[in-house]
Image 1: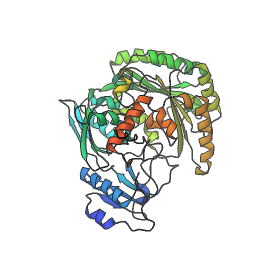
Image 2: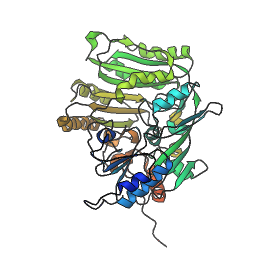
Image 3: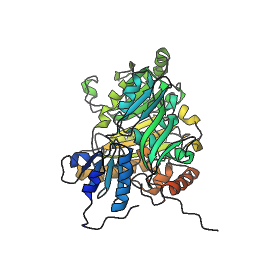
Image 4: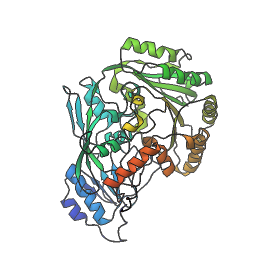
Length: 467
């Protein structure tokens, strides 16, 4: 990691501006406070400067500048990391949000995207050709962030993860080299980038394969929050055709016009779903969920694929939150009892427990094929605790942590994209031991000084002893 700059030493900002196509924003300058915001509003960090880069050369020069000035380096795309790794006190933030070029070749079903694009930008553009790449479940997440973490979303069971459709990556390393990583060029780095996060450099371009996805059966099914519904949900979702991906949210019913007034604020299980296949087969696949209980509201309908993001638009709203996530093999009765007990008395009225049943296409790729770990874990449970009063953060953090511990957090796998700052043990939990060791070796080769440490950090492996 870069050393801290000498206290009080002026930074050569004028030289920085002269070398830059983009924009430099300093503390106290116009737009500084807005530019340092990330989605998790519980975080209030003040970088030494923010540099909005416009191209790969800007990125290369900013890495060199940060190392010369002794500044820690952070990277911002969409700003969705629960840990807020995009911003750090007294650091140089490289803001890639202005790099938004996108090219789509519908004939070859390939797309090039810059890291400042969001999943919504990309998905809407691809949908104009009846195509898609599996991304996340929120439109505002950045393309680089969702890709480098793996990319679990609404097409995971039918089409796999984002990284399963990644063809190549342009990346600037700590040494300032601009490399292409693919199956045939720097394949060790390409392996690591598919799940290893931002540990290896700053991504400036990504190439993806596209798959045919046009009209889908999608939407939300609101069911009463009963044990029978939760117990029935997991086996039904696991047995569903792979074209159907579901995300179940145990939460208070929001005060929305399509829900009856008497349901507002009462516990509900909202099942978000996408069936990317024949619409009539989709109706048959959804029928067992509807049979679990009489729906409070049924918003499932044929739609263009990008419309599913309308149902998760609230997730784009900046808010303070605490988050814990677990990858599990089973969701047995004891864990379901814990979910009901905890959600009956949450620390925040906005708390949500999310249950995803995985498998399908994402699980058919061998664990060792990419750095993304635990493809064989069939269930992901995520606790999200938004709150409003920053003074109460410790209380909400304690409730969320205790809840996660009760569900078996320390024996569970982790998805790196959903981790907060939870310590090295939880970073290691995101990867099988052999995968973590291999990532540490790749880190040693491409970032031996750990310049890129503002992430779910994998420290470089020790250099082999001579002789």
